[in-house]
Length: 243
Image 1 (cartoon, one colour):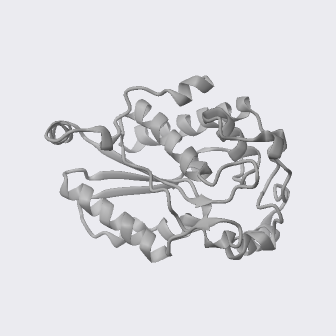
Image 2 (spheres, helix red, strand yellow; image 1 turned 60 degrees about the horizontal axis):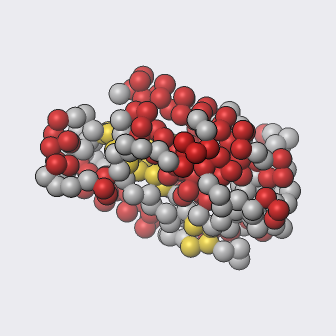
């Protein structure tokens, strides 16, 4: 896909653009799978907007919707991001996030949608939503929870090569002139990697002084397009295997 294709996707089944009773008719005639994009509002260094996680996961969801006939819900743009303080973040309490997702999934079930995929775009959300499906005891309701990086080979960063490349591929918001190399953790393994992740989960400033993990200065559009194709390909494989 070219950059312009990412920006101008057509025929996306976004639920907020539908009309009742036509929407109910669509649901009744199809094996509808709802896709909930989950992001965050938080710092991503000086070169990326605070909406980065939400922007990326929404665009991925749009592309997946066109490939897999999914119904995309509005992006939940707030997540659990307090680890970034005092860098800017707007953060929910973990129980608030879980309750919101449980209520949305339960409501979708009441509207006869029983297959739901939650696609997460912020690492700090992950531990709070991993076993969400076990908290909703509705036999017919099937919920899968993923983070988009589950479908790519690159190690996830924060405002580094991966996120910056993806943002270059999908938007015009990236300011590469302000991009600065952050802390590099690609070579960490085992105990050292776990210790670093533990520090990041508690306080980003304890690890990185500019809010960046990785090197955004080497990011490029072609890399972002390649990563996006990989995510989409692997997700389609999952859908074909499980639905």
